Amino acid sequence: MISLHGLTKVFPGGVRALDGIDLTVADGEFFALLGPSGCGKTTLLRTIAGLETPTGGRVSIDGADVTRLPPGDRDVAMVFQDYAIFPHMDVTANIAYPLRVKKVPRDRRTAKAAEVAARLSLTELLHRRPAELSGGQQQRVALARAIACHPAAFLFDEPLSNLDARLRLEARTFLKRLQRELAVTTVFVTHDQAEALALADRIAVMSDGRMIQVGSPAEIFHRPATTFVASFIGSTPMNLLPARITDGGLAVAGAVLPAPGPCPAEITGEDDLTYGVRPEYMDLSAAERPGAIPGVVSVLENLGTHTLVTMESPDALIQLVVQEGEEPELGARGWAVPRRALLYRDGALLT
Ligand code: ATP
Image: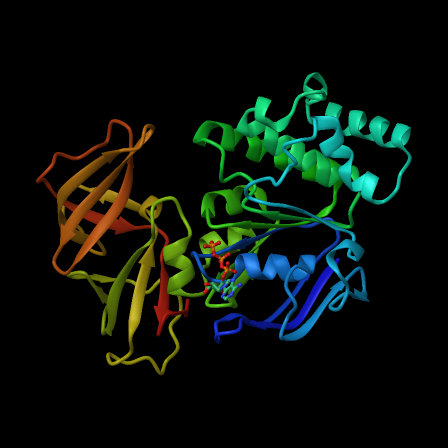
């Protein structure tokens, strides 16, 4: 279990990379840190590893305060973006390296390296050097090295980002299976929302050194707590449309739509409201109907099994997804009918 209490890091020069982080990652949990470049993900991971000293707050691992312990005494294994495997050592020596540091006898090291290599399908490659391996194989060697010393936690910093798209998908499934089998607490940094949704038990979405929302992939996807989280999650971004309360419901993009849930009585036409609806949660109607946003189809993007339709509406661009074979004509008039929506006030989820 990893606990962070009021963790703060201000770099010399004044950049506040972490701003009072409180978090508990449960034993065996796969936890993703997600957020845009510069939000503090890597700094947080490095602070857990002991590679950065926090300016304030505490880090505990399995109940013990490790804030002042050097990295080698923390019982965590970190896998970096560039794998950081040793070019002059073969695969066996690379995997066995942490055991050598721990002064485990040579025959036991070699046996352990062979056992871990078998689990990661590296047996055939034990005598090769990193230069003779593909990117995916090098990544598996880095993982094997992390696994060999049975750490209390894995810390992964974008370990899949150097792989090409197809290999990355394969490695993702592999990593998820491996983490399930080993049941080791894992903190995983990524800026790829699809990767976080696919891999993690829970996700923290970060911005400017803070955690904006912590939740399961389903919670983060279906009920993003702020418009920032909403715009960051989802392979096609959520439509976020300015809204105003009216007698009959919400005025949104030239239409009057029902509110997605009960609105507090104090809301007035002066409130800064945003109506959020994912492209996947809107239907396209060719006929005018109440509760639908009118528009003209301006772009069609083929996504394989479905098509992303962009419509120009009175004061917004609306995107929705239609199934293969149901694409409208370019230039056609259409009505977007929300099935499932959210309402934000001042950027925070209201209903
Ligand atoms: P990326 O996705 O681009 O790797 P990140 O979310 O991991 O970004 P960090 O690398 O943690 O972000 O950086 C957080 C902030 O701290 C950034 O503004 C960065 O410029 C700053 N920063 C990071 N390391 C240092 C350092 N050694 N000295 C000064 N500022 C730093």
